[in-house]
Length: 451
Image (cartoon, rainbow, N blue to C red; front, side, top):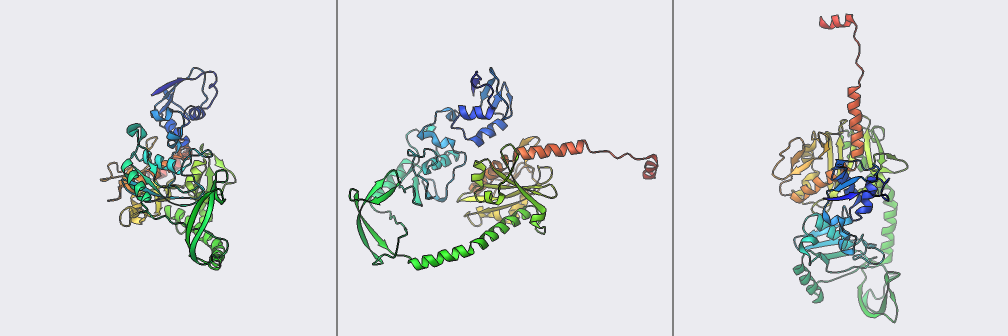
């Protein structure tokens, strides 16, 4: 625990903004979580995020020591609350990650935080598989690199021995690297070699033909001619609107299914809107556009929600399973506490194990569970070995521990963003019951009822 006394220069600031300035490594969503959990105390008590500080106030921070460090390239991973990785394969030694074009693999002069290695380190740190504060000498490292504008598979080593082995195999040419590229026109002949000089331009971030550059011999083989590529492009464009309509309808049906309201007309029964971090409605936002990158929307402070005509709400959720993304919709009854239903899907969980999250039988276990314990938000947990708290837990998937842990984290982290909305609606529901009008009965009615 660390203590701070608010000085003249900090007086008048909001608590959350003071925290962001004081601990720049602490991700904003995690900071909000710590404030809600009262791990940030103002004059010995919990406080709201928007409270204004007064000179002389005592702030006590029950936060891990590493977040008090000054930002450096070595600790940049701490500022990533939810790493974004497309993991193709993982075991105790290596990670195979699909790097998207536009993402740099290591920090450079243009980007120090949003890099592939930073996301990998944040991912392993949050899984508690690696900590620089325990191991000191070794940090997870990349065995191969790909240029910023190139996409493809990158190998990451989790330990020093694996890094040495993979690097040696690359030097010995035991690992074959191949690239696909688009050419202007059709190469003649269809297979061959090209000798050229290429120079790397650091400003333009690319390789360009230059006699002052290094000599390269490029072996190529034509795999697709221009006319086929053109035909494929035309087909994709002609089907684009139909594909979007199908995806939109699928999302609407999933939302209705989470409410067990498949027979309802979505447009008549559901109202979709977007909230900010304080639970206020944002104007001019398209809920379905935000669903295309829900985690990105969360990071931007935009939270889509769907409200049924009967008062129930549906919250979209997103997270990571063992092999890739998991996502879905969880519906809550009007009390904003009881689970009305859930729909979950995945990209590549193991059939018969983690993939069970997408089956109606498994999803039925969530119905009736509570996400609050008194006034404390606890979400719903998937517990290995069987639920011990029947009101707030379900059985984890047998043989699917990693997926179960991912779903637990998905539900908690996603629904946590909506606490301002849920708490406001819960309060309104209580007030409605407390202040409900009592109908006066006449003496004649009382006599009639007694008879």
